[in-house]
Length: 284
Ligand code: PAF
Image (cartoon, rainbow, N blue to C red):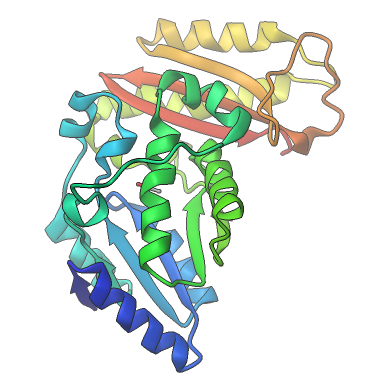
């Protein structure tokens, strides 16, 4: 595995692979790698001849500077993990390479996803995600890019970005990888104590309870009850919603849920000051 601080050099290597007829899969990350990332790399390896991973804690997607500062950084461990996974190249850019001094962040038309849930609670977040991926996709001529469904709104933002900018890249969404208790794998989980982790497992348990209680017609009481249960455990709940999987519109009392795979549960909550998100299809 070769580490490239320079996008130009990596781009040349990718072009050489492609000239030889090899396909290139790309897994963008912010490091602090866990099994979820390992699964993205394995999926990329299964679908592409070469796999490139980036590690870059992207400042433009954090609206809270404290959150950016506290974001876990485990570079030595990450490089060992990627090497063991058989990744071909890792891209480790400096902030100035991605955002040169004369860089002006464009405004991306990402649609309704910016007006709900993560879009509301993290202002500018998806603009920052679109900005960094737009730069990566301009710099690196990869064929495919892999993203986890845990960040479901992000996945939709990437689809929109690629269509809007005409990047010739297939976007591949990969299922959320969970701990045994159901907690969605996240780099942020490493900041939780053992007790905090146990509390955080209630997010998935709550989703399962709501799924069981939810029949053909939407009843907001089920969400309210779960929210109260989470708060009683000491969680600070930002939102818990049942929303349409493509329009992201919230379900309203009496809405038909007969098409269960059109609906997803979404939540964001703080446990021990760590912000966690998760989502789950209503379909079992
Ligand atoms: O999902 C992430 O880790 C980040 O949002 C991404 C896609 C690497 C962009 O910085």
